[in-house]
Image (cartoon, rainbow, N blue to C red; front, side, top):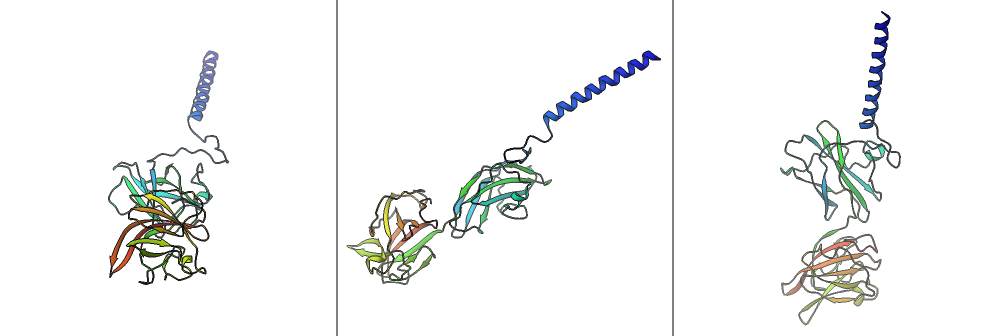
Length: 293
């Protein structure tokens, strides 16, 4: 009887050791990992990871595009888009109240109406011009769990579009104000540029040339371009010109009195009703002194 009790105690001891060792192994493979810098725990997330985030600028806001990297059989609810003004969100856990406040939408974004599942888009129209934003995306699975973060990108919204300018004093569209994005007359105090013709060639000029009480603007030539997206950055090159010869397919910089910059490209020069009309694609950087387009 004593032998049996001794053996029973030995068996219990061995089982206890095995359970303890198993617990140590499991704790090394899972559980809560050490907190990352800033005190946020490093969670393990699973699911498709969005990538290749790109921004297309719109007249009002931007269009965000990304690769979903999900398969046809992946069951998801949609996407969480995290958008922050002036502050990077890299390394922050999505469960925190701080991150919840950066969600672009309170509800999970289901994706666009396009039938494609490999690419998604979202129009972020509630952003302000001249403010730097940081954005990244996480996939939300069907069970509500959140996938790993995409890379983070930053952007500064700015107006972009096409205008047609008539030669001076020939039409109500013979001047333009980039700040307000409106057509004005040549000698309006808000006007940034006007068009004049000499020897059958078109020129853009500062209104200051007509009247010294009008706005003083300067021009710089960038060079040949296929689209307005060419020459995405620019550094000041000293004093510019108050008038500049315009040629189709050439991009230019206009600097306003406050050193806000408009990049424009001559899309076409044509005659209409016997008058010269210049079609300009433009990007206007509302953050003065910043040469990023």
